[in-house]
Image (cartoon, rainbow, N blue to C red; front, side, top):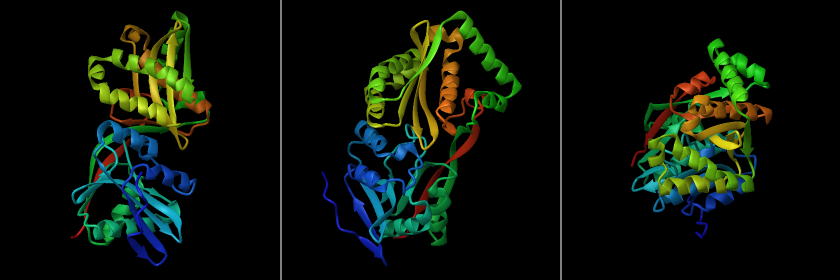
Length: 336
């Protein structure tokens, strides 16, 4: 366990601290309560710990927290590589990241963050990928430009997301007439030809019992997915399912056997579709797409307000009502 270091910067009653132990993030998360906005699931302590253990055990955590009169106003979960800092994440498995702020003190936190980085000899901050509504783009980038720092913001990807209505019928009305007809037709065919059920694992015990089904279906989906799910990646998925209370695994059973599955995370009123798999032998029943459709319906039944299909422009995402959201890579060069 790392010891908490002394503050390294102060402006009036504002102090900044750098921690080098990733376990410190869990303590900051518990302390923050509802005050700070953890806008992305990919910056939650459990996610960061799972990512680091699987892919970056040698990463140097650089956790910057800022307080005003001892009250926590923001956190930047970073890692240091020489004179560059990046987030404790990687774009291939973490779809969007952000800083963690009190929404009322974003400007103050961003200003202090830039000062701490500059004083500590950091020459570049690399944030990748970030959403247009992230605090990085809304607050940190303008503050860096105001100070005369060189900033680069480039679009590098896209995700698809939708706002969920209150009812299933309202959702269907959001779709094109063709897609509305297709969903109804596929569900009707599945019901006529099979006995099917969609079940959602949402407790630690249920998820532990279901994760094997998900991994098996993931591997049976396509050969490239089987190659993707190597030992490190499997450990990562298992760790996410175990560590994160936001984890959900939805399974579509057909005639009593699992035919398709989705791994999702319910965070701040939104369901994030992280990955999926299905039994190719059941593809004639459209089980892959229907498992996602039933996950959307179940999310509405729980009162969730959003559904995020995450990165990638696969056709099904806009067919199911998703709207494109650009993702950006942001670089801030700080003077020496």
